[in-house]
Image (cartoon, rainbow, N blue to C red; front, side):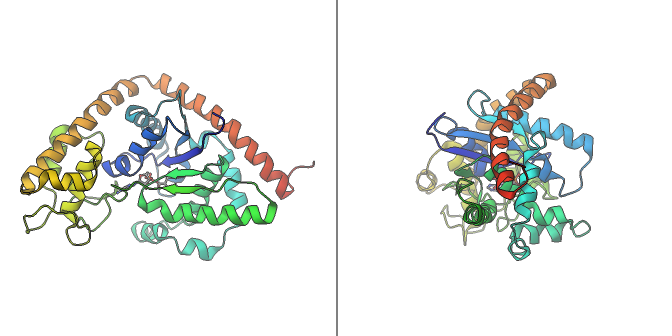
Length: 332
Ligand code: TYM
């Protein structure tokens, strides 16, 4: 719709979509749909920076699309598509790679972390990953990018590239800004609450998946690491475990953390864990149900993906035409 700000965000199609992804990003994606022009993307091209099996990736991409629909992304309101279906992402990626300095990419903390975890496969794509992410955002002239805290540095690089390109070639891209939630921008591991919750954690008790069965959610929260102070307080630095549970509870109930602290004051960790489990189960049960229905009809999912890609392409092609002209790639 004319006059509304444009939003872009993406998620990788990994087998597990966690409560961290949900609270840090997806929950906001859903809430923003009524007031913004939203474009949401399953970023399968980003996924191949680590080893993938083609048939598994193909299935996971469509499953991720189904999960986004189940969470509440509405294709009538927002554009929902799979990244590789719109080749303009790769085209802009190359143009921006030639405007990005190696030193800028060397500073990216996620690259440093992933190089340690995938030491046998430190490929060039892993290194230039943030440029592809910048291309995703700039391609759609997005002004707001709802993400969790861990993606902030990438959006900042996107802003630098936007400014550099616009300065050199004249106004080409809209300047994006990260939109990071006040509560739950960094959901922590349930087992090691000093570390970010990650879907690739080898210990499945460290994270909750949106599609987990209720008894698993209950068990994982019951076992969540807290501390021995026995007092409910919000202090992420010194009381990471309890603070994390309070953030999860608050996000699930849509209330500020201070309100949750009040609600649980004088109660024990057992009650906090049980109530958090109840809130998570209530939120995720209908999503799991809708996901089952949606994944039983792959044809319909493919039609939704194709329709989304068509809409995305219309916007992406306009940006690429502008960029190619400025770079001297067209003969006009
Ligand atoms: P990805 O797939 O790792 O995560 C998807 C979203 O979930 C957020 N998130 C979290 N939020 C809070 N606590 C956590 N523990 C947590 N873990 C993940 C992430 O911040 C993210 O918002 N590079 C991106 C995908 C991407 C993208 C883009 C995002 C590609 N192109 C363009 C925005 C715009 C990624 O790997 O997200």
